[in-house]
Length: 226
Image 1 (tube, one colour):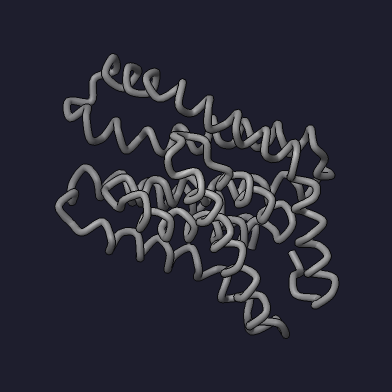
Image 2 (cartoon, one colour):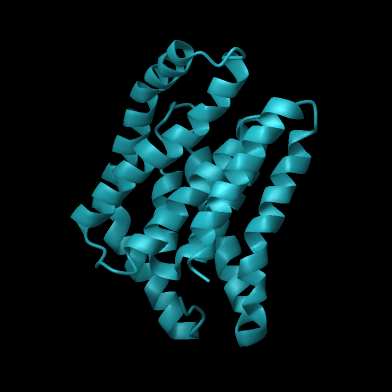
């Protein structure tokens, strides 16, 4: 099941890029909903084996809501958003498939506050990739202040930054020149660095505490099995 999500991410990115190039007039809400549905398919396929379906959904919905709120409370401060930290910790504790789903849902829902647009599908895939990355990495290593911060910084800077800025490349660089692509990505580096740095700081100071809270709920109710 875990192996399908990297493939699924690449497939969705290709789909979103082709949509932006050839069908940009198509409603982005439709594309966003399709991404959510595709993201949910592997997740719901495991429900028939689970005895805690409703509790599982409730926990995912709660963490998605927390991620949305964490972005909304810093509405007036550009790039200072702990949403990636919340999504990352969720992926680290609950596994890659739940981290992926929480990442995609949190960006879609929070953009009703920040504004929906052609960038929304890219943001959804990007944040889903962050949750996926945390789920895969921390399946093999122990989450500590340092490891959480490093993975958070790199995943936001590289995965989130590259995928989200791709929407700008497709929108502003219609001729697809190499210089134009480099210029757009270069202009996004300062913003991505700030976002990555803020994510790392939140994970360093609050990551372990947040993990303990989620694990306590999981142990108490026996909800999640990665």
